[in-house]
Length: 156
Image (cartoon, rainbow, N blue to C red; front, top):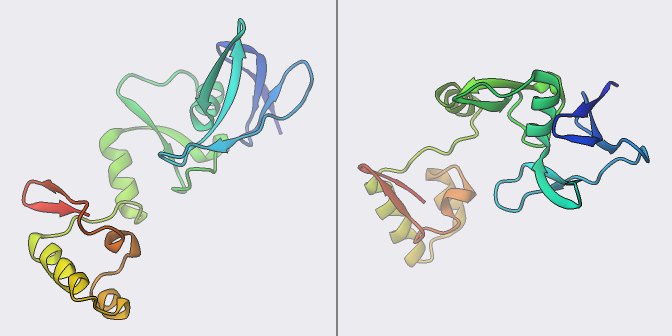
């Protein structure tokens, strides 16, 4: 395992295995998931001020260098909490989205007819087994009234 000083935070080091430690005490920092998007983050301080930073951003910057303009950090295996340097790479937004679709991480959009069928089945208190016969994801069915229209497609 290799530790390097985190750019911009000289009191901390990041490991190629995705860990963060205090350079002076050697203590590993606690990582916690962001409740909105699930990426791991940790608190780092500099000049008496605390900053919450996403771990994959810290690891990429420390081991891959500064992020090129217009690039995102991609988790190669698609697991947001797997922040080893070997699992991260810089990629374009388009490449990142295609990668997420290939791994099945992006839910497909529902057509208006599917939204109508789901709402009808739910209002009739249809058995969930019937719903799953036609719709693969519990997440899709979790809140059918919370919909967003994108073009002629719906995301529920």
